[in-house]
Length: 271
Image 1 (tube, one colour):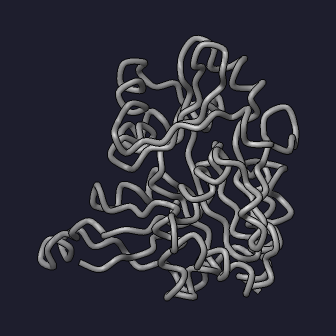
Image 2 (spheres, one colour; image 1 turned 180 degrees about the vertical axis):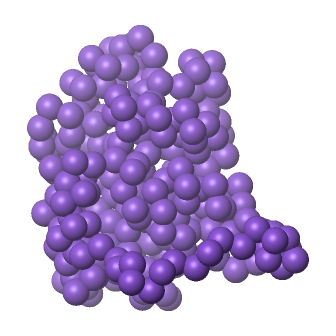
Image 3 (cartoon, helix red, strand yellow; image 1 turned 120 degrees about the vertical axis):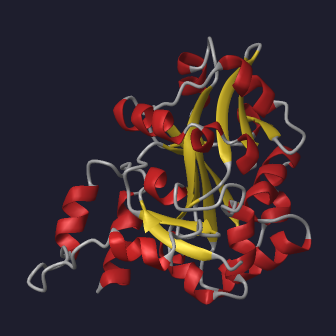
């Protein structure tokens, strides 16, 4: 079974994948080593993202797809993320996901974050001076961009693409203290293209955006059944949206923190 990239919003794209096959950010970065086409594309990733309080300490937990509650409850999560900006999962289910063996937990106060606004901050990673990261930063950097030799190779790949610094975007510790003080909250995650310095967003709420999901496509219906339910072809006079129309529509759903990178990438890709 081969991997495919499907361009949809998160809900509709994920429903076209076989469960358990959606690539995580580190897997996408590793595949970009040998598949240069992926470097020009944005992806939703299979990584689950939780923010919660451990006593008085704001924490980030990153899960694999099996414990990603946004994907497990994609319809409910999609509705909450597009209406309120946060997904509030069942507390017991979230606790089990956070404690799962494959989940990694990070102390937000130790990441030396640069504040963007009241909601978002970022952790910068130099593609050449990553040995200066503290242990907590390095753990997060390798959780995102690959571990061990893969991390070193992926940093070299970014440097070769003239990317001196990449970023991991997270929620502000103060935002977590306010909004996750009683129970965990969850967000979606995505990986930017090389035009947007291959940044990773661990605080995604704009799940209406048409990005890509990558994994194994669900089996399609049999040919005979497909003929019975065939949808009429699109009239030839119907035209696709222009770049400006796409950007105008997207502006409401793309965070201001990545808008410049998003716009530049879209214009480059669709020119």
